[in-house]
Length: 214
Image (cartoon, rainbow, N blue to C red; front, side):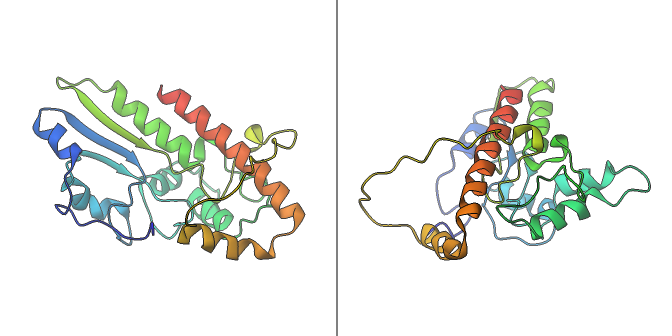
């Protein structure tokens, strides 16, 4: 049901096997390998138990109550006298709707480089460029494209994306899809069109970030 967290040691771990074979194992991004609260750095032992040695764990943007290396970076790079960029990001996520303005608009003024996915790409590139004497295994788990669909202005498409592919449904419908459908019953046609445009822009943003890693 996409809601359960596996216990370390309850399943085989290819990451641990690679670590034991001499690889430097690293992960950047969201993992969903624990149900921790607070700052994600407090839960590194859970990821180490799966075999990761270098860990930069990031939340889903929806889980904005969690602090992480990204929120620390937002605070540390806020210009003196400005409202903390992390506070602005929390405000954007908390009030996001399909028809919301992009995060680089007023009052948030959060640039593309401030985005969660941009931070994920930047940290992955740092790991790739670091000198080492062992082979590297790196997982890059981008938080997007994932609600909220929050591309900055440069990635919002200038026209509507093509319509979704439709066809007959077969098999069961997942509980998480049913949950989203219940939430979307109150959406207007404008909400749906805006969400599709924002999703397309979010895909473009993540694709750009993936290009940086490649």
